[in-house]
Image (cartoon, rainbow, N blue to C red; front, top):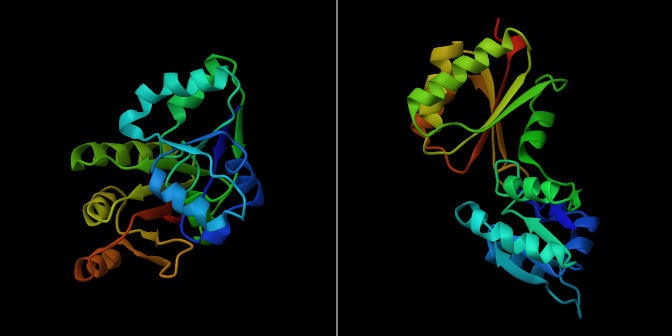
Amino acid sequence: MLYLVSTPIGNLDDITYRALNTLFSVQIIYAEDTRKTLNLLQHYRREGQQISKLISFFEENELERIPEVIAELEKGTEVALVTNSGTPTISDPGFKLVRECWNRGIKVVSIPGPCSPISALACSGLPTDKFIFLGFTPDKSVPRIKLFEKVKSSLNTLPATVIFFESPFRLIKSLEDLKNIFGDIEIVTCRELTKVYEEIKKEKISLLIEEFSKNPPKGEFVVLFNAKLIQ
């Protein structure tokens, strides 16, 4: 059985009992960053508890790791998959492994927990009944603009809150592209969710561009806006 275990996106207290019980009971944990996962396990390790074997599993080695993981699962090994933070496969490695498990009839179980897009949506003040998640936007401006244009067209048919990830290095350019497509709309930006310096802003794009130009953004961002509110 493959367990997809959600881990904290910042605050370590956000991990669930079920997640900890799973991580300390499986034989192997495949982790996006074994050092970060080891730190998490050491933080919660009780006296006498053994830490499961840790093996790296990240975007660059996912394809070569999949046969190894499948072989372990098919011989009866209990395996968990974790990423650096949040829910595995959500803009993180794991989707191709899960697909292969389905193809081979191997059971996959999700151990739910922290997920930054959902956390951001819940506290954004934007409608939550329908949402579109874009993951990370393209690195280059041209494909990013094309993506925003397609989203705008689709929102005419299905109004929804739009959520996407952005790196601090591309945030301003991404916001400029968003403004060119949708106008100077009000959006929400979230960073450092659940951490000490959690910051959530709800402003027009132009004001946020001005602010981030003066104070360079740090950390990954979740950006949200809603089609119903564009008018």
